[in-house]
Length: 206
Image (cartoon, rainbow, N blue to C red):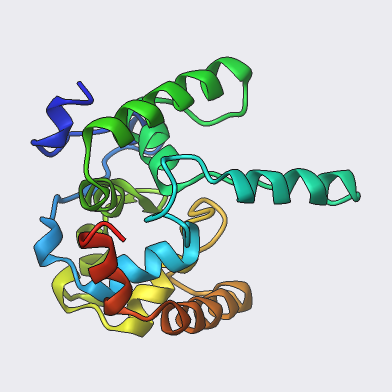
């Protein structure tokens, strides 16, 4: 299945099926990578996984930082990479059980082994959840901004990326100050990473 999905878009995902059982019909429309604004690609990386081009599916530095913070009394935060999120959204279910994490790790290894970084990012942008019933950047762009994903501005892309950590908590219909603050932070990170030049390094294999 992992090898097959290197070449074909998924008709659905595990998270979409679970959403259908909870909330009914959902919006999902696949959009080829070439027809997604570079703004959106760099916004997703800036928001979720800035070391995405450099790691092999697991960001050891982020994991160690999260563990250090937890040892110092902070809540244990997630350190999932984009690849791990693709594995989870495609095949698995929410939760932090050891069994689910072990399966996710194996799937992450297979995805990094069989897919290019561009394919992983393309898959992520197309299956990420942006609201309780909206999956993928094309469906989200059409619903929230009435434009195609190909036409997203930097500000729109950053706003979409701002809800990715918790679309069940954050809304784009009436963005809270937290969402708007995160949008501003993402825009800054996009500029600091170098924008489209950063993406070109991704295509060139860094």
